[in-house]
Amino acid sequence: MFFLPVTLTCAGAAALLNLWLAIRVIQIRMAEKVLTGDGGSPRLIARMRAQMNFVEYTPFVLILLGLIELAQGTRFYLWVVAAVYLLGRVLHGFGMDGWRRGREIGALTTFLIVAGLGLYAAWLGYTGTNPLH
Image 1 (cartoon, rainbow, N blue to C red):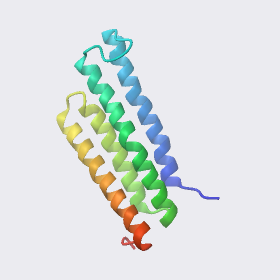
Image 2 (tube, rainbow, N blue to C red):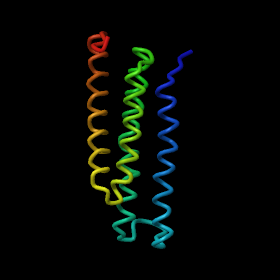
Image 3 (cartoon, helix red, strand yellow):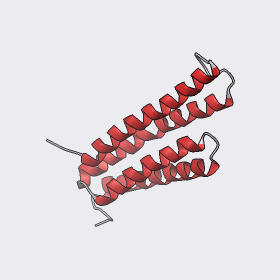
Image 4 (spheres, rainbow, N blue to C red):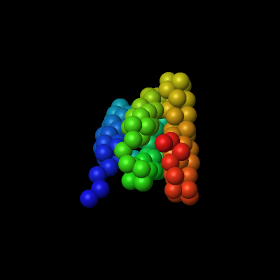
């Protein structure tokens, strides 16, 4: 039996973070009385994009975390990467409400983590060696 504590913890936290982003969308829908679509509301569009952006990137991060964890076991840096990714996504969510710095940090963090995990996974798969050991 395999147990992937980093991936499992990150997936659980990601599910809760997605619910938080969805609730933020619902709050604007209720405030602006928009049942479906975006109603042309810039605030609603921004919140919807924050949630969808999260949904677009998170599966890649979870898959990469899981495969790297499976190939190399639990490592401290995977915990750090997972935590930084989730924190970046929270900042991005607030950033989409107009806090430009939060959006920038969240986007940059996401790009760097996806690129880093992707390169690391490709290296591990191709060489079978871990450059971080």
